[in-house]
Length: 340
Image 1: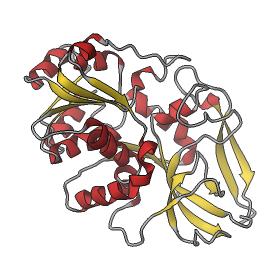
Image 2: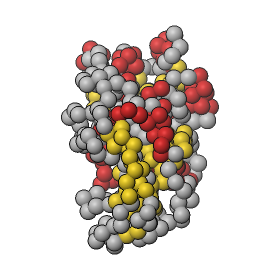
Image 3: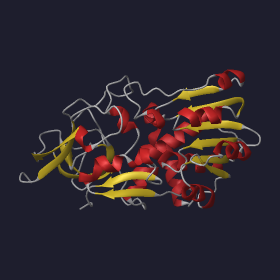
Image 4: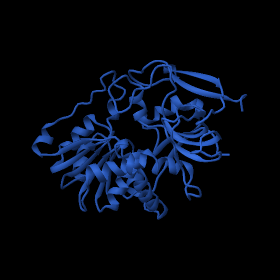
């Protein structure tokens, strides 16, 4: 094992706009043996998420920014291949922060969640629907949005990892799901396979009128992933006492240091609406509860999903930009290796 190599993407420069390979050093290091209290993980699937872009920036955020020279942070699924930690047995599959690299060495400060043995779901599904993606959708809609049967829920980036799950949970709770996405193909997936009441393509010239027609009685909940013009447009349709679940502002993430996203607050005031930002880690103590219910819905066929999987760690920087280009559908991840 000592002859094995660990490839790593280390943050070299902080991006102000679009992320490129030049923002990282792609290095190779000898693979160490775990010491007492450590376990060595072989990374299998790496999740690519908009929050990765925030972690690259030196700004106030919910976790410390990735420091220059450090391995780029990322969550995923890995397998234990050597262990001197009684919490981890060789062969175990775990989920947690693994980084943009082939292998991860655990430490006492960071725990990894073991995956149940015999789970009748493949690893991409687990990483997507039962991982941070599904948990974000679950707690964001149910705890922050507090949907009531018959309400209209509008979701931006609705064909993305989080948005597609939000819309389906909304329907399970008796709500109308209306999606905003970036192509006619994605609209067809939302209304066809996922059962959304309506979907609009924000690249169409008349998308704002289409959205208004899709919400004839107004919007009760806006699950916001994008910000900017989309947030303002949905805000103009809010009903009295509406709720805006502020999950992300992806339209602003590549706009330079400030990451500013304009928002028209007049409709918020006039409709006495509530806008609340949240981070899924706020609900960490309840992850098992949510995963149990999400798993039941999955096994019962009540939650459908898609993954866009890129093969090979070496392609991570280019794959990452699919989040911002709209060149993917469902959950975006990179397959690094197969389990042994």
